[in-house]
Image (cartoon, rainbow, N blue to C red):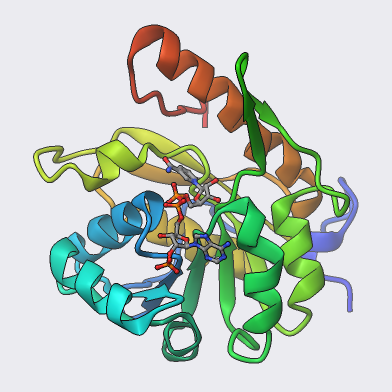
Length: 240
Ligand SMILES: NC(=O)c1ccc[n+]([C@@H]2O[C@H](COP(=O)([O-])OP(=O)(O)OC[C@H]3O[C@@H](n4cnc5c(N)ncnc54)[C@H](OP(=O)(O)O)[C@@H]3O)[C@@H](O)[C@H]2O)c1
């Protein structure tokens, strides 16, 4: 079926009113899982979303490790093994290292069926000249996830956030934009709305999954910026 979202430019049906791109759904009742949630990025996202009132479950390869980390995080965050975390969540953020990305998702394919998956993995290498982008054969980590999870709705977001700022309870607001990518508008709208639950943050649609590589690899540039200026740089998209 043809919808306004997949029409070519200029082909929008005259009778279909354009949707306000900032008209986002209420996501406050969704349960958010974080695979690899015992790491810095997962802890930080879990803390911020929990602090905003979201129900959050962090996952780990070890249920005990997840429960211990959840207690340390506070903010109502719970812990479970990765598979249980996936099953109990509506939205599942993937926050494992690139090295473990494919194997983790493959093992959780059934648990993630029907879920909205949000990949925040940045495939990067490091050498003595700093960080550099790796080009996955699928194009990006997000496209690898989409290939491995045919029954999930895969999106990509939260790549450019500083785990240090996310985890620092003295930081009240994180003024930054979150680039959200995905092929289904209903799904990217949900992820944008989740980002907007965190004070200072705004989720901005940034294209389909085939454009995820640039977004993932931009982190290598941010790491270089952070090293030079001893900062925790984020991004703002202007004029939107
Ligand atoms: N750190 C940041 O500032 C930041 C910002 C944006 C995006 N990211 C992305 O977020 C992801 C996580 O980053 P991080 O710094 O939090 O990483 P991390 O601490 O190295 O790993 C996160 C968690 O993943 C699990 N894990 C480790 N190796 C694994 C493997 N081979 N297979 C499955 N799970 C494994 C571990 O949990 P268990 O041992 O408990 O299972 C670990 O606590 C990365 O892909 C990164 O590119 C990070």
